[in-house]
Length: 219
Ligand SMILES: C[S@@+](CC[C@H](N)C(=O)[O-])C[C@H]1O[C@@H](n2cnc3c(N)ncnc32)[C@H](O)[C@@H]1O
Image 1 (cartoon, rainbow, N blue to C red):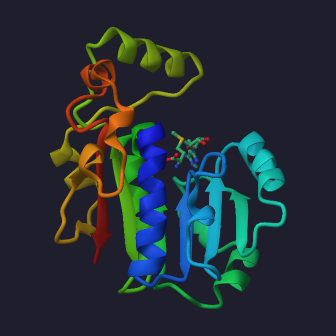
Image 2: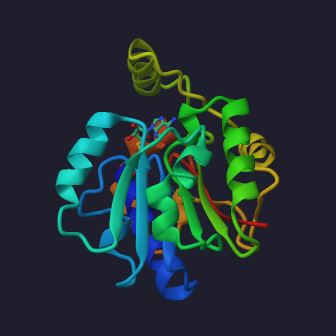
């Protein structure tokens, strides 16, 4: 989880300082603590967070009090059009659709149909220069590792089935998006990330990619 968040900071920097996006829309944000996107972006960037969990959203509103140009909405990423057509979001966007979109740390929570429908809906909504930063979460994870089995069973008891996939399955499910020239990069090789946060035991559990791959998806 720490590696996943560390990559998010690098992504926020890259999207706004290097790639020039002035809007970042993040799906399934979790808590926007001091290691999240709004703390790293170029000043003046509009950051729209969202999460399905009303408790996360309430805590997030507290955390974000006074944070400039940063908002959070309760929304289900499986129906991105709900967030993207919210009147308050439309007012904030002022017609901008060539924006940065982030779906990081969610793919394991969605089944194949849900993941592909989400990717297609965001593709159809966004402009030709939009980019989608995607985390192929859990790719190559060792599902026979007792610690992984324990985590999956814990989520299952909360009514959440976690999905472990191969990289090639993820390639198919993100269509019609395609990875840019960098392709899918292992989280351990994600630039700017401190991969030493992973112990040998973590690697045994999370697999050789450190728990997944990330990619800048383009049209
Ligand atoms: C593993 S956290 C990822 C948080 C953050 N994106 C990161 O990478 O650090 C997963 C988050 O996804 C949210 N979530 C799960 N299913 C969701 C859905 N269908 N739509 C939106 N959020 C969802 C959970 O409430 C949780 O906050």
